[in-house]
Length: 173
Image 1: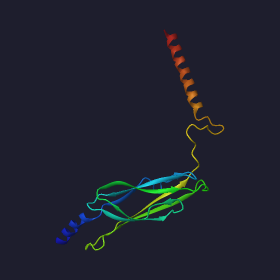
Image 2: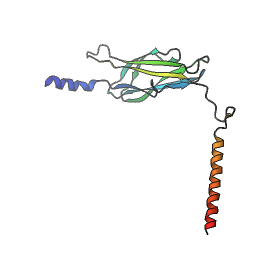
Image 3: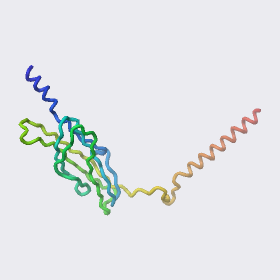
Image 4: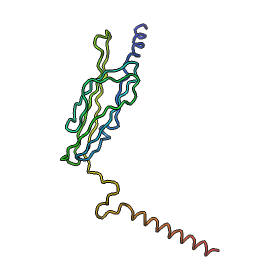
């Protein structure tokens, strides 16, 4: 019983460090060739003490850049952004997929006299190279009408229906 009580009380010392991301293997970050962007990973530390974390880029160095090394995540942190810079070369082919893996491993305090369990996370997401998006207000591709024809046809049909209804109502009177 005493051993169970000791284990239960020591659970409060467990690190509450976590990482979140808006992108993952099934939800890729899309970017055009020659473009640059930033993916933000979100660090959380709901514990009572600061957490030291070792950050490294395990995969995806052809398109991703991070600041590697030890960082401190303050206690009470919620959604503190950690930027991952994405730079796709201009000669990249549309449809290319690059897997990016960023590793976060909590580091115990040396000489603290206690046993610390490190927590490690690998955040994985894909970077997909897409065609250059068209700019707002740009002329549509040849043969396209930007959807205006459907709007005009709908308006004409609506006006014709209103006229027919008005004529039928007048005829009955």
